Image (cartoon, rainbow, N blue to C red; front, side):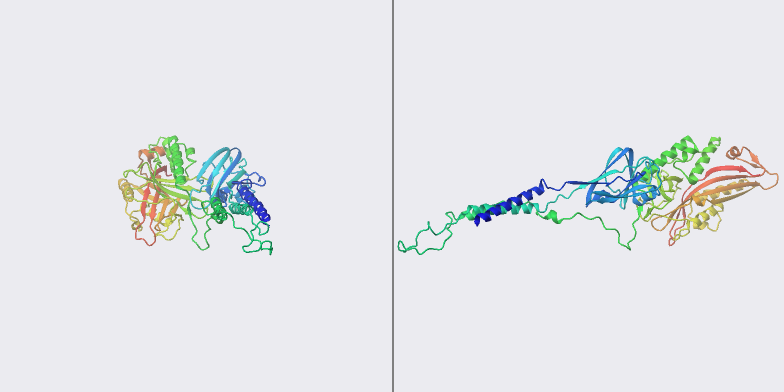
Length: 569
């Protein structure tokens, strides 16, 4: 019976050891797993890879992308990605089925081409590759991000994509099997080594029994010659078990589970908003804009303004180029220098909404004596780049709120926005009226400034020096150029543009009005008997305080730019 038990124990022990060791060697689970498409998707100009692909079972993944020739991978906020793709056909990879090792994806039909995304302002970063790229997912900011793949916008985007992640190499039963196998093996060997001694044949007779009398005796297990043998066997078993145990908890790995992704916001919570551009994007956009406008100012070609300017700024610069080309002695537009960003009002949004505008104060350096310039840039739609629509030097003594990129209180607003001391549209209208007539009833709505004082004085002097002429001033707000951003504290920054027209007519029939050199050069005449209209562009940036504030509206930046002149008939 002992031999049977010994044999069974040894066999089971060896089997357990083989299985336990095998789980860590020949039967060990793979260290990495790879998922790909079960079948190639239909060709499309765009492939979207969502953030869920960046990690599988809580483990970061490696994304391998192969394409035919050159392609680009651009990181973009997920809501912006959908807006940029629009109605175009695309493949949308949403995640990884780790069990089946396939990519979860949908093929969306639609337009067969898109613009080349390389150089697009809406992308946080773009990386180019030739035939192959390895990508490790890193979100540059909070929120949901998407990797957008494209060739040139016309050719099919890469879809030969595989995702590799670390496999679950835990073998929770390996160590227990090895321990149990060792115990069974030792027990079997120990049982085989211990031999019992029977009472018949070899046992000594009982004391005092008469020789020849055989009464029989119960068999007894003899004590081993060395009583410490069994104790040593048990001790050896314990030592072997201790050696087999790992230094840490044997079952810790089996009880741990990968961290699950953060839960989404529960209903009722305030929606999260994110800046429409990050700091690195803003710096890149400003640099590209400054370089483009500087090149246009150098060439003085209107066509060169198309890439990075729009609205009133483009019109005023174009007219300045034309006048100077015609020999009119005017100063060129002020240069754009974005070397230092002093403040940046970048709106935060929950969803992709367009058009978007940002306001920035830049300068060539940080010196206090350097006059900074206030800029407004607008992005009309997801596929357009930001274009400069306002660039005007700040006025002495004026202030622009100190704002950093990412402030959630900066929001796109409207010309009829409430919650302010005066609605933006009305504020610009009142300012135009005050500049036409310094005695306007609305003059007390505005903080006194050197600009407003000098403007009023210039108009007064013009009238007093031309007593034989009837001179009038009329400003019109170009409403399409108005941009409004709400800022921390409840106030709003408003950039806009006035068209200012100065009209001079002789008071008496037959009277004449002499023209200065600039006006004479524009009109080709040195005097007129009918009269003249001189037009100017006046870009304005104002700050409107919150409704509950006692502060007045202030003019932050302003400029007067000659547009042209025409003789009256």
